[in-house]
Amino acid sequence: MAFCLISLIAVNISKTTILDKNYVLNKIEKTGYYVKIYSFVTENFKNHIQQSGLDESILEDLISQEQVIQDTNKIITNAYNNVHEEVSTAEIKEKLTKRIEEQTRGMLVTTNQKEEINKFIDDICNEYLVGIAHFNIEKGFYNTFNTIQNVIEVLNKVALIGLVVCIVLLIAICKNRPYKFFVFTGVSMLASGIFFTFINIFINIKINVQAITVLNEAFSFTLREVIETILNVISQKGILLLIVGLLFILIPTAIHTYIKNKKYLVE
Amino acid sequence: MRKIILKTLKATIIYIIVALFISGGFLLGIKLFAGAQIDDTITLANLVTIETSQKQEIKETTLNLETKMLQNYPDYGTQYATIEIPSIDLDLPIYFGNTLEILKKGVGHDSGSYFPGEGGSIIMMGHNSSNIFRRFGELQLGDEITIKANYGEFKYKITDFQLISEKEGEKLPIQKDKELLMLYTCYPFVNIGHATQRYVVFAELQ
Image 1: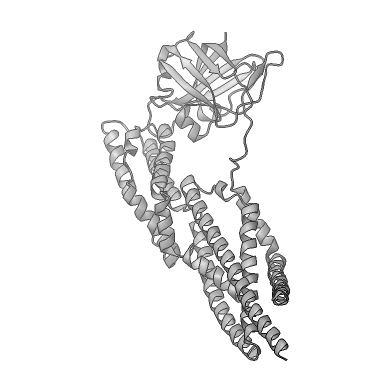
Image 2 (image 1 turned 90 degrees about the horizontal axis):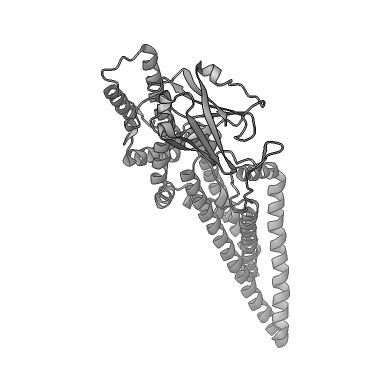
């Protein structure tokens, strides 16, 4: 029964946090992810401008924050809904090509230079894709994410069925001693509470969550916030289970002992 | 009443111990079945954490005049000096390293070359953009270059200019017979696309 409780709570925590698309979108907005990733990508564009020989003005307002929000949400929807809508860089390509053509009007541009310009445009588009969508890792991420979602669903069903079976069995075993039902339930809750509390303490000791840095600062900041929230939820549920478990043990035991003692005195 | 309380407490403690055994059993089971994966996950998580909470002792960079070697070299990616060329109104920061991030901000110092004051080849590079080395074409022989490092000031005089290929630029000579500053940038100074030549300015310590 403890195993079923732990599984159900773990599934519940996952489903209300990291596996909930709205939760993630909400967190992204709260942590200012869109603004940070927009700055990150536009700064990275500048890594390519100086060696291109082109004027930096061609990168001005190349992308908008709305575009970043749309494309980021597209990536998230891809992951949660198991679809594969591509992030398009056609608009960026078109804008850049037009601006470069204007800048090089009247200049003699060799075939070699045209190739270099095309390479520059491709580099900028790739910089956008890597910055927004981390396209170098997205396939692996989608597959892993879908696997986790499927495992969680199976675990949820198994744990639910297991819990119902345990409850039915407990009722059957404890029909002559009803207080035992509450005590055994309390022991399961207490065991689950100890488990979650231990996990929370273990993770906090082993990993410095606030120092996690992955991909870029925008993503890292949001990831840290999500992990901290999940750990807080685990801690709260753990403490709640500890308290409720103890009460489920203490109160029926006290009542049973009192009644037993009273019977003994009467006899 | 006391008896009831004691009996209740005794029973409760037994149940708590049972709960501890159950949760301990789960944790042991997880450790046995997935211990390696958990260790790998923790290792991976720790690999992506940057320990900024640890106070890093900032050690001053100094030049040992006897051995002509620096003590406490600057950290990679940090600014440790500035470069001034009055003839072309140039005053820029010098960073240790030559990544794209560094070259965006100023002058990069090739990590395979010596530092100013060490008596060897010093290789620095910068983009040919208007805010970096665009005006290198206006430099003349004899023009002064001053490098103000956080461990001393060094003055150089330009002795030569060379136009070399990109590949040759990657193999500028490193020697320790005399202090020779080599600054290079892409050539042509105004170009579109990838420049395949490098304009190198040679300067000797005064």
